[in-house]
Length: 115
Image (cartoon, rainbow, N blue to C red):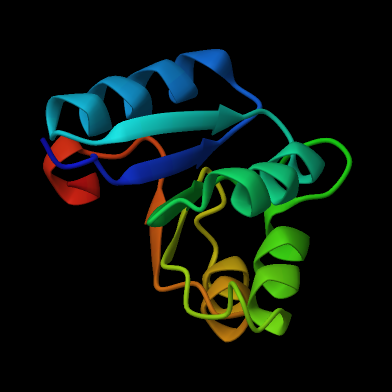
């Protein structure tokens, strides 16, 4: 049996984490979760996820800071990052993409859009 790829879901809203966890697990992935940016950085190091689903608005280190730090580190520079956030203004979208996010999905999202 081959190991499933891991997805790290980072969001401070437990409902959103549960929704994304179920979606990813139903698609055949293992899910690791973090509820703030600092915990996300630790889990990226220890769990080596194949993908990061990242909220922006969190206490402490926000998603933009996490994205920036991951892109500046050689080991995580190519980790796929999808920002999943309620921020739907053009400035936030541009900032996320400029910081290196691979995609930007706004909440509430459609299941097929995130898939």
